[in-house]
Length: 328
Ligand SMILES: Cc1cc2nc3c(=O)[nH]c(=O)nc-3n(C[C@H](O)[C@H](O)[C@H](O)COP(=O)(O)O)c2cc1C
Image (tube, rainbow, N blue to C red):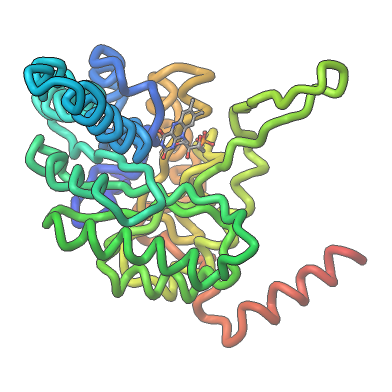
């Protein structure tokens, strides 16, 4: 039986939905080629962070201000533009290198929260050959004077500005911590987002109670984390007209099946690839095919969204009813 795993994500027709999510894995060109060999349908790059860009601009500013005030000839202290833009320059180079090395779509990633100058890098990424952009709005709201609306407004402004700067498709990678995700999704789409990537994982520092130190921790995900994503995919898949990708807790082919039933067009893996290596993408594909064969599904498209909550008149009431059932 020939099986159709194809999917449309951000306007790309892909042979299947499996791809690496944003991580340092793809900093290495050899690894990128191995991921493509293992069947990655697209390559999502590691993020370029707002702080990297703004940090460089600050360094430039200091270099201009300090010595140039003392002596005009100190202009020679100015870093060479190529040197000043080192991190960002390397990132753009990496986009071009990856573009040259693979034939699948290359999705560059920008990570930032404030709508300022760093967003101009979106245009440079497009020029460097990125086929699409993922914007990671990694924003922990900690200011007691800032409202939820302020936080959302910032995310929307980032998306509108990037939308103005580039023509390529835009995906927005969100955290689950918004008070009205359905409403935010709708406004993001109006601001120009073509897709959502659900969800960002905030890294959660631990406390060393002997040393009285904050210990930065980045654990690989567990499959339990998929459940939160499944719920929101199931809710948003009937509300959001664009593409939906899942990131977080996808480890096996069965996880891919679940995410697809909830409405995902693309399934991103990071922890599972870090744990098992790039060939794991091939394993996941085999698992999906085996399950589909066993259950006589011919197309992943037929399955997509069949467990969405879209046909329910009131998903919130359904959630509450299930919660009460589960407690019993
Ligand atoms: C080591 C590491 C680095 C990551 N770097 C980024 C990053 O630069 N940008 C980003 O959007 N997500 C980043 N992530 C998050 C992943 O893309 C992904 O969303 C998260 O790990 C959940 O997916 P998983 O369960 O498949 O690991 C990183 C994750 C890990 C483990």
